[in-house]
Length: 523
Image (cartoon, rainbow, N blue to C red):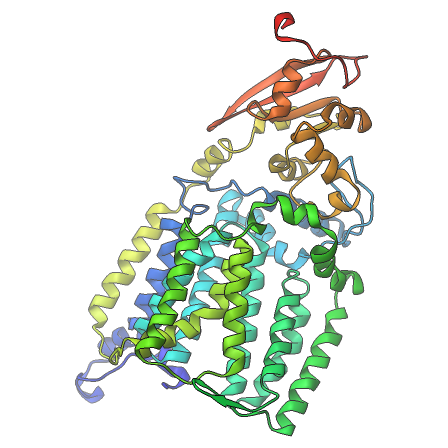
């Protein structure tokens, strides 16, 4: 395999001796390598094809980023970590920890510097960082830039399922770092293993996916604890010194998880998600099984088929941990569509190896710096051309959120809102009924009541229970139809946003939410 510096230096096969080349030409060739071209093209892919980054599609629609920004604003203005729910009138003041506080800060600082363009820029940089990291890991493992690029390009299609200004995108950089460290350790760099404890110390403050990373580390140790040689699997057990080193690093990694502002509460958070948030998992689209008819589903199926076909053409020896990682990744992606991103992070380097070996790709060391420079310039122009202005993003924001309706909400109102606008209400410092966090709302029974209202199980009773005096929903929602035909409720605001029309209902003073329903003849 090529040395680590191979990704930074162009191949010089077939070129004139260095002494016969001008310094300017040598610098040009050193800069415009095949790797720079591949990376530039990868960086252009998100702004062209990602739904959340292409300004012509759904930029600024993500409902989560707004309550993340509200949380980050509170942290940076009060200089105190959040210990109680700060945004809603339903669970406000109840104990709550912010498990993603550190991953919120890059988006907050970007927003402070560049406003809406800052959110867009931060999302693009983080997605590109993931793609470049996957490309680098694929190249390090396969030694072939072309194979690494195709594997990373396929990974981009999987990543798109979690596209958006998401904190988990930052956490997946931590997961890539963990897997790169384990690869370095397997390659004989034993000291690299000690990078894992500080990595986990940071990771637990980024996102609850640290638990998956810890599980992968445990799986790595378990799978390497015994000898197994049969068919395509060939594995030697860890030497006693290696096993002791791995166990020591694991113990230290677990211990440093307590280095966070919330202590054991943050360690419990992802476990609580798995065990105590059934409504959350059942009602959020990203927790649904992967739909194979979507772009991400087709890409996942293509990646799995490609790995099978490539190994059928020219198989290789596998270690048990490699198979365990791959099986886990694809199972997780098929069971929950949001984990297609995770599958990309885990499987891309293996896929790069399979592409090179399975299809007998010849060396791609020869390169044309001038052609590389042209492609880099073309990718840069595409990015600059598509990159939106602040005005464009403000206009786009107004096609997804009823900004005028939200602005008119008064602090004293008890507004029942859909979860898609709750985060924006929190960002605008408007008290909301619910937002897309769901965790604390499920624990306090609010999520269950929200679903009862939205699915017309007992909406009027819910409004009575929470003393709701205003309702903000789209006019196509069942609860909107109900309120149009219920005495005591009137529409005080209607706002067109893209394909939706948001209506604000107000309860007539003195009327109960559960007033009688008016029949069609009395409308």
